[in-house]
Image (cartoon, rainbow, N blue to C red):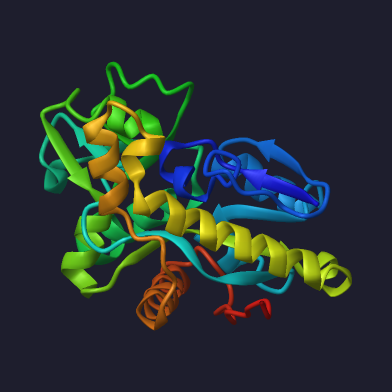
Length: 257
């Protein structure tokens, strides 16, 4: 099994190697930023991956969701932020990280649907935020540069205030063609990922030593996938359809585990 792995701090609870768990079959961890893992799963370069929720929405016919597991936030996520020299209502130009399609799409929903505001979008090259009016950052870079500009806006917090729903940033998904021939392996992966998450949160300080801020950050996140999360994914999809970023409403299909 080729497993796509995003090596951000927020994926640590799923890192079964660190929590002392093993899969009972050969596997390979292939690491990268979300956009790279999305592309690999789409091209068949990996069999299973932790992918952007937006990527699933665009490619739902090819994948199944592994249930119960996600990276979500009930309010503040702290690692998906807009940093700006001016208040969000005054932003005219924003540079968006290329690392996450979900965060890029959520940014566009915030401006075009929630704020009903037209802005110009640019790609953020090489994470260089100097001299830019506003930027979208995700992951460890968002945490690192959180206080580098006058204004900071947490995208998940904005979503929650508008919808009263958690926001789902990432999902564990498997290619349908792989799942048909390897259901037992997918079930075993599900078991190990879920046990890793549970084991991590029994004693997070054991795995994030001498870093209280990191522990607080991880405890603040939501790693479940409930009916409320599904409602949020459906609403996210509807907004994407409304502003023309997708062409059809997805069907959310799950692997049997």
